[in-house]
Image 1 (cartoon, one colour):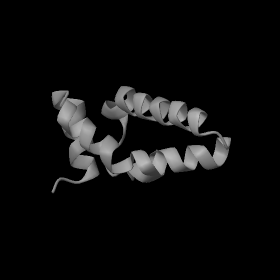
Image 2 (cartoon, helix red, strand yellow):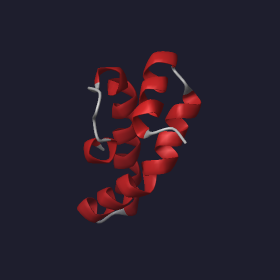
Image 3 (tube, one colour):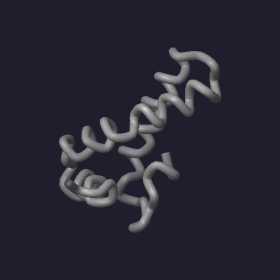
Image 4 (cartoon, rainbow, N blue to C red):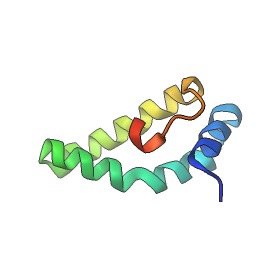
Length: 73
């Protein structure tokens, strides 16, 4: 099973939608639950989670090796 870093690099270098989908599937519950706790609103939490993953997609190529993805998210 690939690591988060391997998936992130595969997405960044090959534009692999599969790798990005695996990252989202792995971490979406964490991101959504933290956003819900912060906002107190499930709809706002969904928007926040989408924004976080959109930011990840845009910054994937610039994240340094060794980035702990759950911490970054």
